[in-house]
Length: 177
Image (cartoon, rainbow, N blue to C red; front, side, top):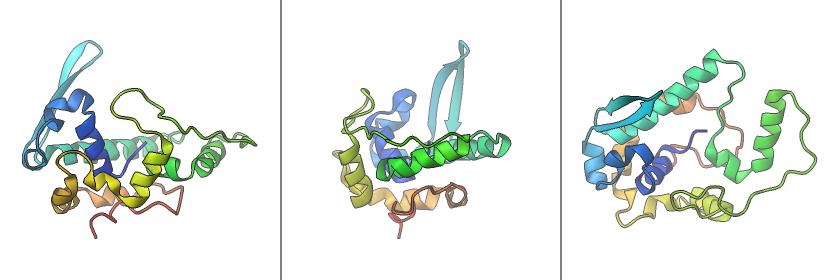
C-alpha cells in the first residue's frame, strides 16, 4: 500500500515507528536533515541512511521498492491508500479481479479505526482529510509551509507509475500546484 507522500510524512511524524529519530523533530529539521534508523532483520541490526531531506527520501525508496516488487512478481498489486478509503468497493473489485476470484456480493465497510497504534480516527475522518487536504494543517506545526520543499524532493517519476484504481481521488501532486 502506497500513500500520498505529504500525507504519509504527516502520518509518520505522528507515529514514526522505527523512524522516530527522524520524525520527532521540527519540519525544518526534517527537511534539512539526513534520516538514519535501525531495525532488526533476522536478529541482526540493520541501519538505513537517507540523505536530506531524509524522510522524503524514505518515501521515495519505499515506493521504488514496491514498484520493483510489482515488476518482478506478477502476483503483486500496489494499492493506493486513498483509493481504498475513497472507494473501498472499487478496490475490492480490483483485488478480486487481480486474484481471479469472484467479487463478493456485499462488501462491508469498516467505519471505526482499523488499527490501535498512532492516532487512528476511522474512515469518515480519513475520507475528509483526503478530499479536503486537511493533513496539510494537522499537528502543532503544520506541514503546509514545507510543501514546496517536499514537492521538490518527491520522485514524481515513481508516482506516475503507480496504479490508480479510483478516479475521484486527488492526484498526489495536487498539493504542489
